[in-house]
Length: 142
Image (cartoon, rainbow, N blue to C red; front, side):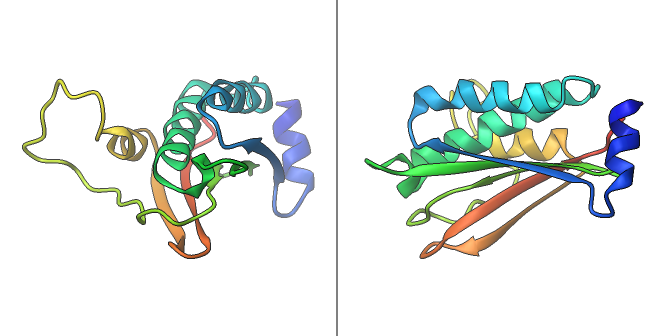
């Protein structure tokens, strides 16, 4: 309740950002960052899973995963929603939140964005392949 009261003091809520080296070993660090920021939230596990999927995609499919690449994690807390955004360095395909019908249910990849869409109430992408993407997911605070 105390965090909700503080978030309510700021018209746009509270926003936190951190830049991570674009390496797979940084994905657990990004998860801990989100868990720390949302420690008091019942949606922290979902947010942690979302950032893991989005960061993994940035590292695997964009220039973020190249030498000296980075990705940025942003967590915005508002009274009405929690938004988790991962910014990548671009030069990769634009992510699409579509269901993969007929996909192998035992495959180890190809379901991350569908999982994110299933956990969130709203998802989206902005940006381009040339400049990078911001991929986001919103969760209700409760």
